[in-house]
Image 1: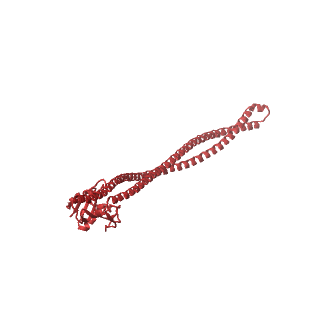
Image 2 (image 1 turned 90 degrees about the horizontal axis):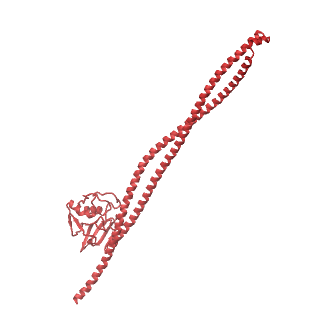
Image 3 (image 1 turned 90 degrees about the vertical axis):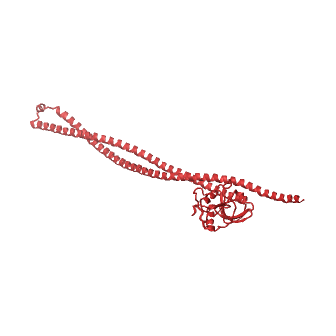
Amino acid sequence: MFGGVTRLRILPVIFAALILLVPSVVSAETLDELLRQQNELRNQQQQKEQQLKQKESEGQNLAEDIDDLESSIGYTQGRINDTESQISVTSAVIAKLSEEITNEQGTLDKLQERLRVAYVALYQLSRTSPTEMMAQGDDVSDIVSHEMYVQAIQDQLQKDITSSSQLLSNLGQKKTESESQNQDLSKLKNRLAADRTHLDRQRNQKESFLAATQRDQAKLQSDLEKLKSQQENLSAEIYEARRQMGAGETTTGGTGGYPYYNQCGGVDFWLFYKCQCTSYAAWKFLRNTGLVFYNTRPGQGSAWNWPALAADQGYTVSGNPQVGDIVSWPKGNNMPYGHVAIVTAVHGGLIDVDEYNWTAAEKFDHRANVDPRRYGSPSYIRP
């Protein structure tokens, strides 16, 4: 009968224990999945941040390229301006040459007409000889006058022929110069067209560079913001899962007196990241004992490695808790970096702890009725 009563008393206890254990297992599995997702998001965020830095670096290099391109654009624009000035001057030269050619051609045409008339006159005069004139009864004075007139026409004809030859020569030179100027003008116009095309290409290239870089940076920034938002949401789920996992535990908030509670980010005096469990535990250990707990292994100062850091500094590591101890839990699927807290009370197999970054991101809480072995095999660090 007594054994039956004992069994009746034991069964509800076992049943209650099973009820408590089952949700914890389920929560642990949920937390494991959430932490896995968080780790993936962190990796993605790091990759995006690296890509963004790379794009920003490319943007700086591109800014230098754009400066060079601006100089090239300025040079090309200068060539265009010079070419336009040369075209203007060359066009004026061609216009002046055309005017002079027209004038000289007119003069030459008049001179050639006068030569034609002179040749006709000489021809007609040459058909009557002095003998024929005497036979016709002309006196000597008429004959002399006739000869002088013919000579004057011949002299003027010779002058006109010389002038005509000079005009033809000048006209030929100016026509040659005009052709040369027109060829130069054609080359200048071709160069102007090529420079303008090149300038348009340079400007389009500049705009394309800027647009592509700004577009890539904006895309990466948008992706990064999305990842940060997802990570924040996931972090909230993780902390909620931790709260659900701690069945029977009670938590209260505050700041815990921690001096960096509103200065999160960066490294503290003890070389731990502020507002993380490690920074708070190092600060609280100093307050409780007057002793410093340093990160003696930068890059390996996560909570799970604190027993090794304690050994480096000559502190005691025990398997039994005392008030004032640092409790260090190992890393596991549900705690990838482990966790540390300060023991504030010991009652039976349970402890109370002060800690940071457990049930809320970068926040303090006092957690009571903690079963330390629920989260792995704890180590207790003391002077």
